Image (cartoon, rainbow, N blue to C red):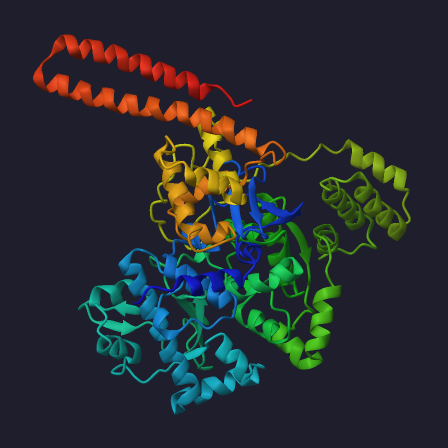
Length: 630
């Protein structure tokens, strides 16, 4: 595949706001000219991750990771550079020429995982084709249209049908064999059942197929709903793919790939009970819907949601099972991500979203979802009434005791007062008496949430790119290392070089000049080459020419604050420091070479003398590095 031209790369990069792209994975808040959030590359307790939309680059003040929009996707989603360019082009709705296409989104480096994604993509196309283009899919298509599914929705979610053509007809297995997929790969895909004789049979028969996609829109599993009404009692209504190397049901949320785009606009995600609820709501204009796999909502899914948004709306049925499910979900979120705001939207009992839409229309559904939000406290105070007759004194006392337990966890005293007043008004009680009883209750214990994990795909991530010594990537907050005297001099000098044409002329005219540190010399040469055909410095464009370690270094350079009024004196001071350091570095290198030579010829006296000299040189170098530029 040909190399993507630099001009096209620049056009694609300039077509997006880096904050919009990074904002899909990191919650960002405005702070001056920049946006800040928690760094996704280490456990970041205080927001240290900064995104500069004007200059189109990011920088973490703790771990020092830096880069542009392409390198963020490369590092966070483990993409190659061409894959990252293709991803950004899609985000910008730009048509990448055909000769530069063909890089699958977020393809893992593990070849077997890539093949598993490929077989799932092929299965999706096959099942979808059967549904919309063949007589075998007619009944399934009728079922979906009767449930309010339009052609656009069926195509959007790539719904399909796995026909039941008898024991001798295994439609997907035959297709996979003809396509040349390896037998062992098919065994591991979860799409087939292995018989005792080793033969593979299609796992799904006679089922409407719902593709399960990861956060990048790649199919990683399926959920199949039985179509035959006369199926035996032992036949599950829904049959899901088993877990595989690319599918972990505890870490997967249906429709997250589409919902998070809508969530960026409205600030929340909406948790529905099932896949059809999500799809129907999407068709009615509520595009923030997600669903867990089956009935289980897990702490891992909560952590993923907490990385995406600040608020989660839980929209389950208003019947008794739905209310019980809401209560369980609230407890799980509060234990796992207590900083995540919660709201509850109970649908009318007996109505799914698609039934509500068909009965009342999309506009009323949107209005219902927007204006029927209630707080977890409101929900729980209502939920506690289930099964009680509040006209009976014993039930009323039991309810009030339980209600006070709910109100006591409200952190805001004003909020507690509001709910106590509601209880007092409704039941004709003295609010002061309720306040005294509330004060006598033991204070709730503060639960420390577990750390949010950083592997959104469920894949074992490849090794992180090599970074300079100062960059620490771990689960613990890194300790910022102070810059040495020479590091700071080099960074300030490069900052002036990038931003000031006069300084560039001065430095380029010093033909003998070199940075004593190889990393800075390399960065200088790349920037110098960039200015050979460009007039204005563009940090994001230069980062395209750098490896991750050099991108980090350039990010540090960009964050340096320089004195414009006294720049000539500052530049002179920086050059003095570097000119002192460079001969010293050369002398150390020469002395080390001489020591090696003395060791080879066995000259003990020379070896002792040179070793003493080298120690003195290192002491001098260390002394210089510990001093700070005034």
